Image (tube, rainbow, N blue to C red; front, top):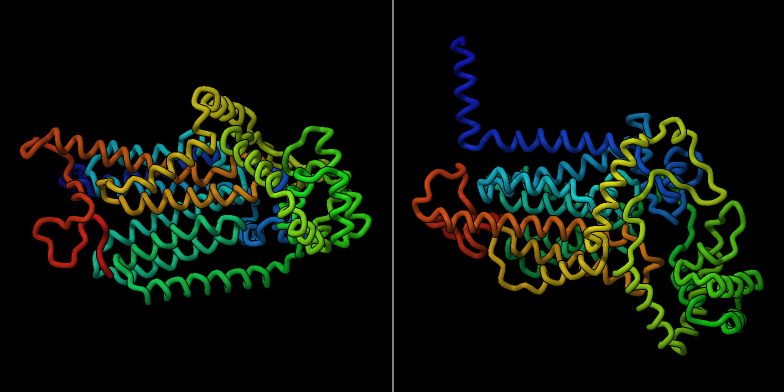
Length: 507
């Protein structure tokens, strides 16, 4: 062996022993895993929604705000850069595994355990997480964007005081991810509030009222400017899709005769009145308990996304006139839909490509068929766990996890406050579906499932690290080179005044 080779060997051995090489090993593992997952899903699993947005992203259909214009715009930009629509599914996998790498690196920093850092990476292979990684859905985008903000906030918290430029660059990146999350899912705004607080607390450990107001103002300004910029770039057709929710309530709470009377009282035109009555009759005849506008409401072909835009005011007027009179029926109906969402979520696995009746699969998709061998292997993996561990795919379980994270006041570890805010985000997101859930669908609880899984992984790694430290004792022999982080609320021994121990470095 030459002297140069010997020096390289010694340097690598030293880097491995003192831990400086391990984050790069984690990066290599995360990159390989992300590439493997992207290969399984290539060129991306599409639903009817994502097929529609692909037509819009390619400029073959006008953009409308039934689905988020920001997602169509992002897809359009990626296609313009790469020339391939499959890049969106690959980016989803890259964001998830990149975020998991950041979290795994932080766990390595906190615990000094290679094994525990790999546990965090393994979250990406969990059946209830991997099942939708390559499905181009706004729910997936919301989940991965919020998790990226969490990882960025934890990274900012750990930066030394002299890394000012890096700190602000990461905060801006986190704000952009947070803005995208708020724009990509209309009912996801409640979930962004605790994550926004997490980002602010990463920058200022004890922000006063002025800093909270200033930070909130900046976020609202960026959100407003982002929304205006997206609308200017896409010029979307207005659909006022929110009217779907009162249609669902009216059709399922009132009888067909009551729907007819309510429509006439609110001044609905004969076409809307007759369609609502038909929808109420159809839902009762066929036993359909939710999603009335798409399942029972008579639709023309092709589907007219602007139909409700011209009648949303009348529908809302009907709702405000009738629901107070039928409040008991309304409460019972919403409880029924919400409990079904919590206990009987469907679509735990999305089987590739699907379009609505009468819709057309984009020709670009037909050129890149799915790999059926990998698709069926993934389906067997996911559905097997759905059979043996069904709670992983049900909203009640992740609601319970969120409640525990929020209500558990005493929790040691390097990210106790962050875990509480993560639980609060999941909790608010699930509860936001109580008055709005259109149907029972697993994708509606995908963010709580991802947030809860990451939180459980962090709690488990902290607990195992403390057990290992307690078993080792003061003279526990050889351990990994990196020390564990002190308990929450305590600064390291000998640290200067104002240092934060495990809760980050004050700005």
